[in-house]
Structures are given as C-alpha cells and as structure tokens.
Length: 304
Image 1 (cartoon, rainbow, N blue to C red):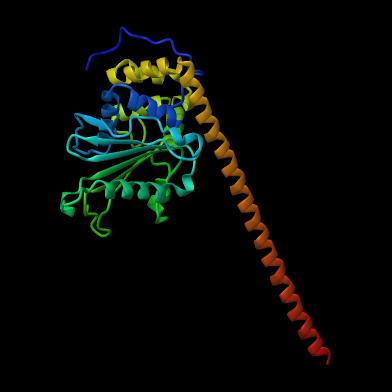
Image 2 (image 1 turned 90 degrees about the vertical axis):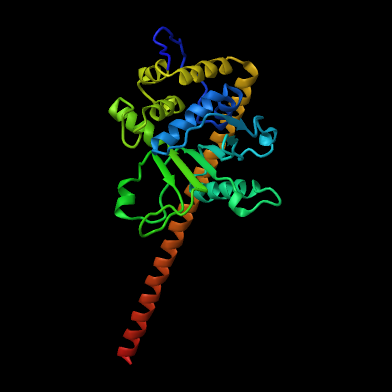
C-alpha cells in the first residue's frame, strides 16, 4: 500500500460531517469510490479473524432515501452484495438502542428472506451479514459475570451456535455490533488506537475516522489516514462533500431530526421511570395502609 507521507490535509474538524449521522455515512460509502466500503468491510471481518476477503461489491441501494422527510425515524442503511452473492446490510445507529437487537435481527431476517428466488432450494440461500454501528453498548441476553465484564466490548460478532460446545450451527447469520462510544472512550483514555478488542489496526483506524467528533487528540485521526490510501481517500471525499452547500443543508436537517428524536426519547424514558417510581410508591403506601388496618383490627379484637 502506497504511503501518504507526502500528503496532508488542512481540516477544520468542527465543520467536518459526522459519519455517525447515517446520512453522511451512506453518502460517503455509496457515492464514493467502492474501494472505501470494501476496505471498511475487510477491516471489520479481519478484526474477528474471518477469512473472508471482499474483492468487489455491488451497492443495491445507492440513492439516499427520499422518504426521510416523512419518516424521520427511518435508518438510512446500506445494502450491498459481495462477489460470492453474500448480502450485507450496514446500519448506523445514534438512537433507539433499547430496540436495537430485535430491529437488527428483523432487518437481517427480512433481507435474508427476500433473497431466495422462486424455484430455488433453501440450501441455495445466500448468507446475509448485518453490521450495526452503535453509539452505546449492546447488552447480551444473559447477564453472566463474563457478560458484565465485557459490557464495553467494542466489536461483538453474534452467530447461531450450539450453547454447550459453541459450534457454529450456520454461517447464514452473522451479526456485527460495533460500539462507537466505547471505542472513542478507550482511545481518549489511552491516547492511542491499539486498544481492547480492536486487534486489526486498519479496523481501529477506520473507527477513529468514523468517531472523529469524539476523539480528543486529532493527530490520531491524521495518523490513521496518512498511512492508509483508502482512509485518506475517505477523509478527502468527506471534506469535499461537506463543502457542497446542498449536501450540508441535507446533512444538517438529518442531524437535527436525530437530535430531536433523541431528546424526545430521553424525555419519554424519564417520564416512564417517574411513572414507574410513582407506581412503586403507591404500592408501598397501599401495603402500609393494609398493614395498619390489619394491626388496628388486631387491637380492636384485643379490646373486645
């Protein structure tokens, strides 16, 4: 890979579009050179020691969804097909973490079911991979001590496997959850990207660019794109896209929609917790009243 030591970018990071906003993420990886998405996917797979190497890719939904103004909560996902017919679904999530697991499983199941052509055997079904970039932890179903210790795990790979011997039952389901918040937190604490479960350095470099708004030391990002041709291309493209006035307006609207939704959901969650607390207090008061009535009845019986 050719080094970019002779190249440097003058970047105003305060103006650089945030790739955690799904509009910017999809714009970069569907409108830019296909090698960008290929590089990102290969880094993700390599980080989990998956032998799959992506050489070519077909973007199946290259257009930015027009219905987002009416459906402000919809996620602008990326759907792609690899050269071996494997289907890939990539989503960027800054909200709705409480419903993330059932949503990604449903998205995977819908994409998996849609791909079987009429007249084909079920054995000919192409595998489907779902990748979710998440701004927070995806909690496992079982709250074991090991699971609690790994709550800030950056990259989770979930598959269908035997519960006793962990034998993978099928390669048709593959779910990747990437915790961007945990990554940025760990990078800021260590002041480097060689951290936790980001063994693949290129994966860590891509994540540093994706989470650049949360990385305090910007030289980490500069080091990431300086030595990687595809990442340098990605940052260059991101800068150019952000200079387009029409693109900036669409990006700003989408960002505002996400922020508004996040605030609304937080308020709803706070209201729900207050209602639950009030209900518990009512139940406690009712129990105390019941106990007092019982005690009063006992005293009356003693008097008689």
